Amino acid sequence: MAEENVVVQSQADMWELIFAFGDSMVLKSAMKLGIADIINKHGSPITISQIAEEISSSPSLDINYLFRIMRFLVSKRLFTSEHKDGDTFYSLTHCGKWLLRDAEFTLAPLLEMQTHEWWLDTWHHLDKCVLEGGVGFEKAHATGLWDFASGNPEYNKLFNQAMACTAKIVVNAVLSNYNGFSGVTSLIDVGGGTGMMIREIVKTHPHITGINFDLQHVLATAPDYPGVVHVPGDMFVQIPQADAVIMKVAKKELRLNGRNYYKMEDFLHTKSFQFQHYNLLLKLTQ
Image 1 (cartoon, rainbow, N blue to C red):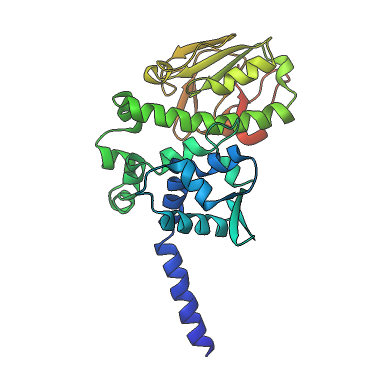
Image 2 (cartoon, helix red, strand yellow):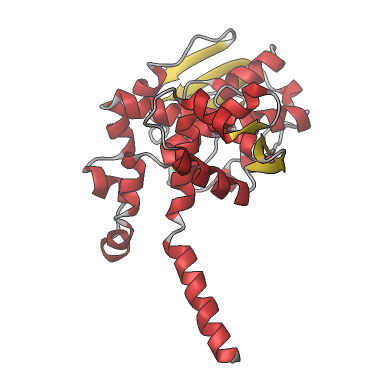
């Protein structure tokens, strides 16, 4: 009997893994339908009929599909459901609020990018990466990510928005918990995208001159911000001088100011400035 239970459980575990992709797809559909935004705008628990009316007035809307989506996302704790007066009322959870498109802090753009066909295609080449080496994105699209973005404005926008939404969450935590910016007069955000992170830092610490450093096609869509200069360039060639640098990830050798760096830990502090919070902000070596 014990062996039979193990077999049944292992089968259940495998079924869960096989259909794990469905979680992201249901989440994507909820985002595209704007379900979280509808519930939030209503301001109080809302029925599925009310949600359906806000989504579309079309008679072809299938409320049974919508019900299945809601039931699934309740089980995933994005929404709550309460049965009252013969109907079911849905509310947002803290987790579900990350789907709000117009919220100050949102992960909807990241979800949109990660579930887009352009990005998902790369996962279909994971076995080839094992067998042949290389990068899945390049195998899927016959070009590198940055070249693809450079020639595809829609993808460039999708990628930049995804990076901006995560950067905003991180920089909020940094500004709330870190007090070491007083000794910095110039700060460069390497791979800063459209400049949201460096903008927030400079806005809070206006004595800092901010440099947003990224590829030309990225900066082409970057807004102008007070106290921030957009500088195009390639981080794998050279990074402009500044008191301090922000970087999220360093995956290959960098050459900065005449020196080679192979990992983030190689960026050492100078003077009295040092920051290890989130491994984002590190001082350049003199």
